[in-house]
Amino acid sequence: MRIQDIKDELENKIVALTTVTKDGKPHSIAVEINKIIDNNIIITNNQMNVTPINLKGNSNVSILVWNNEKGFRIEGKGEYYESGEWFNFVKKLEENKNYNPKGAIIVRIKRIIELG
Image (cartoon, rainbow, N blue to C red):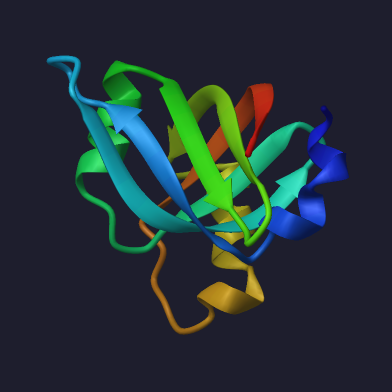
């Protein structure tokens, strides 16, 4: 399955993002997917504290999304940006106009699994 096949079901939706702590424990939070560009999922960090730390120590991530009929688990590698092109990109998004973004998370998709 390609990310473009489910792009409309993901952009601007709240999903569960799971990262891994340095001692191997999962850490899940609710986030909004801002955009999908090529094979990248873009998420703004407006309030996260633990997730950026986790990504710096272990880049493995899982994203879970579910609608009324089916769900998807997206596995990938996440990178955290506090400056540069991706950070500037999320700062300019309309949905962030009332926020002061702290960073950008870019998830490079490795695998998509359809659930249900």
